[in-house]
Image 1 (tube, rainbow, N blue to C red):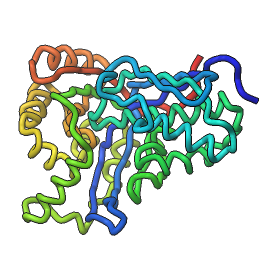
Image 2 (cartoon, rainbow, N blue to C red):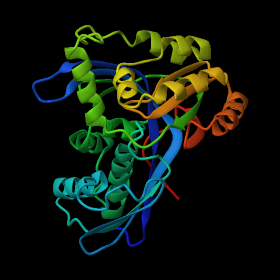
Image 3 (tube, rainbow, N blue to C red):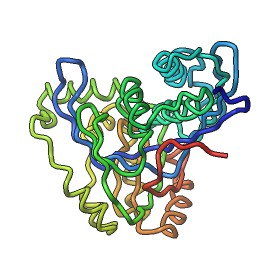
Image 4 (cartoon, one colour):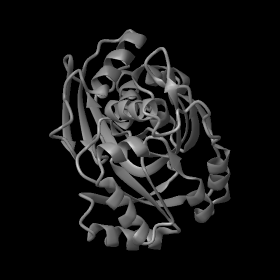
Amino acid sequence: MTASAPVTARAPAKVNVHLAVGPLRPDGFHELRTVYLAVSLFDTVTVGPGDGLSLSVTGEGADVVPADRRNLVWRAAELLAGSAGVPADAEMTIAKSIPAAAGLAGGSADAAAALVALDALWGTRASREDLAGLAAQLGSDVPFSLLGGVALGSGRGEQLSPVLARTPSHWVLGIAGEGLSTPAVYAELDRLRAAGRVPDGTDLPPAEPVIAALRSGLPQELAGALGNDLQAPALTLRPELRRALAAATEAGAAGVLVSGSGPTVAALVADEQSAVRLTAALAGAGVFRTVRAVQGPVPGARLVG
């Protein structure tokens, strides 16, 4: 049965604490070996009864996020409705706290939250496995946004194996400048590889050192295992990111890396108090437009309220 009152779900941002990118595949994607970490920065999606589909966006980056069929939330609604055989009728609102085009999977989080909220609104009673299958059709990061926690991703990132990490890790996220296009960063990686400026990605480094560090809960061990093959192309496209990485290191971060395709810099710290201090230091450094203290792992897309 369709719910008569609005339904809200939220989903978290992610940091790739390990991102190894293989060569370009025949299907146009790159083979990935990545370790996802869901962190405590959330977007929410509220859905209610409607005549057809409508979408509005508020909050962080609302002026650059499309509110039509180009948005993954809209596509998630059409996909779920088609799969369940129900009318695609809903008024949908995204309240964004995750910056757009920041390498934090904000759009994927929105899509995952939409699947959970619309399933409740429309009474489709989809299993988590059903929703995960739909999520994989929407984008490489959407299945993890649905799952949350920590997971090893393979394929194009959509094939997930959950990883147990009992001890939380603390991070400061610094968003440096305007958003970076993920396809543009991957294209730059391919260009750098063709020019012989970075390894060709044939031999993907193992993820086990990062997984072991997450399980140990030791920040210095995790700091030494961080890695991201997209960092080099992101730095080529956005040279000022070097200053941002240096600023985080100089301010006391245990380890730093570009998150996903950037331009977010993820700075690992020892504990919550260190995160507070680093947030204050980076907010005054003049190299980031937004600075947020977060921790992870946190659960994936869930109903709220």
